[in-house]
Length: 427
Image (cartoon, rainbow, N blue to C red):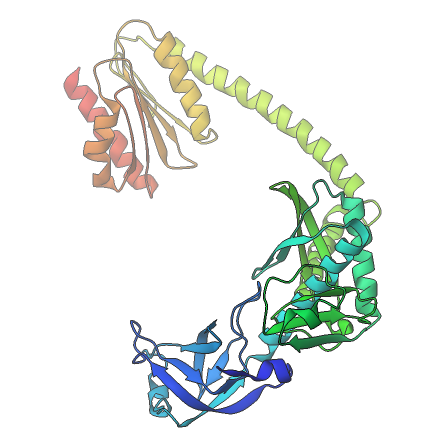
């Protein structure tokens, strides 16, 4: 059994321990795993991630517990940390120096204690029991076994939670050998273990903000949590999943959101009171502009189709750059149309062109994309597949239509010239 120093003093940051067992060789496939007679490192458990830090300067990657023994997995040796091999000469019975990543530990203490208070207030005010807890890297969640908790109710409970934090009440952890003594406390949830029981209480044990079995690490007073903020609610398996942040991460979250809000104030010449109003006004203006642009774009598309139809069918080849109209080939270049616009044009042409069916090549110069379409003898997909790669083109399609993108205008021009030659030879 490993002596767990974090249970005796949660603020202990360093210790010297005796090596009890050594597993692995320090390589990527078999990293060192040490067992120590005593440890300051909390192993993963109770919804809380493990502590990290170093042992003799080697970074920890994982700490876990099995049957009362705590295992410390270390970073494998590599080119980057090869110089550390000289101090990694552990022997059973030898000593090892442990240094805790205190910032990570304290953030976990803040977050876990915040969860206790929030869960306790939900239980006291609504009778809702926390049936699941997850401490992620960016937020935490609890699953309260009540459906449909409203945002107003959650905000009320959030305020009460922060009032407990501001009161700076004591947070105590007591250990019991059997459940009979532990069950005398006003527990929020029934015990599920019979021995080695640890009970965390927030506030006066006669009327605590929370009292529940927990193996995690917590600060000595609630004020060290600092702040708790509920982020959102969602329905989850007949319960309400509550997303929230606490401690340093809640402060950082506020700082980030305040920065974004300040930038929006500058952009919209607003303050907290009228920002949403001004954003809605701008959205309406943008909607009108989009409608006007869409109308203009559709008008241009219609004119482009009409222009092609009026020029198609001439006996002789007409060519002005990438503007060709002939019975076997039709090329148009557009600097202002996007791919979806060109697809609309190509669809209309394949339906409306009478007589011989040419190969249609529509060019978007703003995106270096070519749209091929036909209802005639050419296989658009095969042309792209067999030839576009010569000019670094990427795309595909089927016999009736294909698209291909080129990294440069020169590559696109070479492909268009090739397509023209193919159609000229096949006429």
